[in-house]
Length: 172
View 1 (cartoon, rainbow, N blue to C red):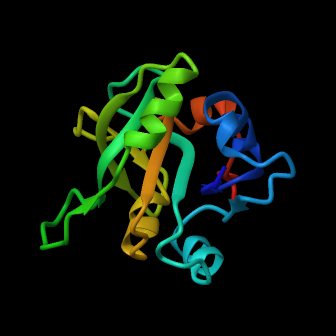
View 2: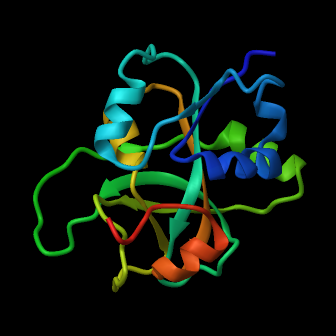
């Protein structure tokens, strides 16, 4: 089997791989890259990976209206900049292979839009989407075979995110 590179932001997200995509990870986990949170960590961690390499990004995301625990498959990703509008390229994400794996494992994912941010989103009027801090930056690097799975960890609450997942230190 050819294994994809699996990208997670933090060590605590390893449990997401074990739960949702266990057949996509090598036994020694050598195909998992832990980047750290945010754009700079993404660029530094992934710049050496060939753009033709199959990539699956899995991680936690917030949502204003999806229930906690929802399995989301982003079909498109954008930056979240609610106060201004400027032209950006459309960043489409593939999902067919990873959707099949999720269904084989008993999950029914929802296809959605993902907004990436440089900070934790605590409020938004955007509905029917998820918010993360990495996917747009990964997509912007030009990987040709990028798929993503986002697990809703909170409804725009840092406290709930900390209880559900693992994560960033709000005091720094």
